[in-house]
Image (cartoon, rainbow, N blue to C red; front, side, top):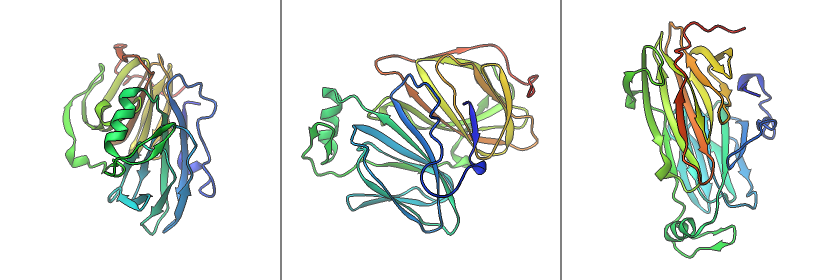
Length: 273
């Protein structure tokens, strides 16, 4: 599976997709979707494993509560990440359905990670009993188009792209590597490229475009979610006339340094087959 569109999925009940047919090669252990009804509170149980988990909300604000601590994602599309993997509650603070994507990344409980957790908060995580009292170190924010920096297209693309690393490797405890926000201008592209040791998803927030993965080109629009595995060529072209806004989620293989290889194709000539 390379692509789904969440507006075509059931909006009731439990998570309705998990890219279950994907053969993951990273610690990316779950990727789920559901929709929170207006005002809905949903309890999300612990999976009993050491993990870092986070949410991308296509709307908001949404509130997350862990052990009496609360944090909001903010107005509009946003995110919340917390590294405990423990029981928590999500609440939709709006009067409309909010699309929710959950990312869970398993953590290796090496000594460095154990010490960082012990220094930050009090929680029993996996086999580690921590005793600090600083609380859960939430990461949260909104995808604000005004905060992006415009530049020439990257990876051999054409036109202009605006980008921002919302979260980078040093922000995470696991091998979750990036949470990025980007906009492709009309006529712009993210050139064709691939990664060693890195798996990705693009989540389209607004606009329409053409995505290419492993030489297959298909249309994407607001609500599209893609999956790009290790070594799979991928990129995206915006034929216009409107801007194309998306989020990038990336997780690397444990104990590896990821690389990026450009394939010298701006994708502007490719069309769905």
